Length: 620
Image (cartoon, rainbow, N blue to C red):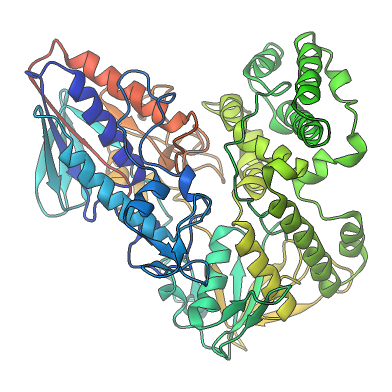
């Protein structure tokens, strides 16, 4: 049912496990996807200025050996090695990849369409390396229904075909909400689906104003589509760089609830390795001795902020005194944590150098905070520009040279502990809603922002006047029938301002709230009672319910032992499901798939000589 990034990972595990099985045990693998290995975000036809925010040497479809223990990982090139093998080069603009320019470097953020080509190659690599006891059967179609007949699943495709299987892997990705078919005049001026770009923005004229809701990676993509994508360029022969307009750019107004852009990503010189001291699984277990369901703000966040301070101090010591002093500090900190003397950790030296709460919550500098409280939008934007400039300077120093960036990167390193604290009902309902409404963005703002060059581009556009962020946090957005424009009014400043926009671009995807309304196989499974929402009363969490083995939970509360669901469809019951995997790290997504395939193979050894399964990646 689709064959995107997660579906291809499942296929790799199925093939690797089948190679270890008795060769008399045959596997029929049905691959259902109308456009295999081409999820929309990695379409090979998109322009090169739409980049991965992942350095190419740290992106790979081949699992790390530490992530898969039940069958050896297939070996093959990461994205950097694959691009170099094909002679790809980066042009002088820093993003166009082709035959001209300098060689690709390990820290390059390559175009997403190049990763799409890598996915197509990886799919063919899996086909070419499948053992003789594996038969791959492709179905260029989408699934629209799933029926159960005893232990057999019957998949109905939109071309009328029916496929029978003993086991099912569902990795269809995030299900978007269905567009409202109303007659409101504003609907004609609302761009409700952010991709594909630049096509979604083609109707925006140079004389018009477009308001972009969101300040994350999607907003960055949209800004580039409206500037570089329309012939503008960044002149990097001068410092600071300047933007050379084409004259085809519209006026761009960007806003969000927080009013803060994502932080710039440094180019990694190595994989950051950090063993937590305060924020550990055992610490979470200790919290649960007092209450089975935690409150993230009250229980979990203090430990995470404490760990940020530990990580900052360790990185500062590494830089100032060397590895010996840094490791000695960690030993002392670990001893304090083990003995429960967390108050000692809270008084770490160097506290004046680093405000963990300000870093986590994304607060601007004190002067910027004062501006936001007492001035207008223009003053706020100037403070944001200073904030971004300081952050970009930190990113330029890298994880090795900036204790701040080394500390914030720790939030990526402890994502499995965050997952352990919140998944499968680990938080109260109210806290889970708060986590997904606020904390997910706060964490993402720290660790999955655009690469530092792209952040510098956005800063240049702000300074040049092409882009504005002067509305501040959480502006009021409304449609004006008289002028047939969107009205955006600031709410955070004593001096209020209103901006009129011809277009409103929604730089995020609304997740489906009613599973039964989904037109794909997910909706069909919900209508049959095979899946249910994890928190049906939540206005925020739209995940389906799964158990700790990845099996979907039905309306009757039972788990489907022959069906597994992985990926963004489970975001809420589990956490942090949508990311590219690294060849250097333990990756929970690959671990879970490996465990599931092992469970499948062990379960069928005594059942017969043929196993039929279908699996997939992402609907588009």
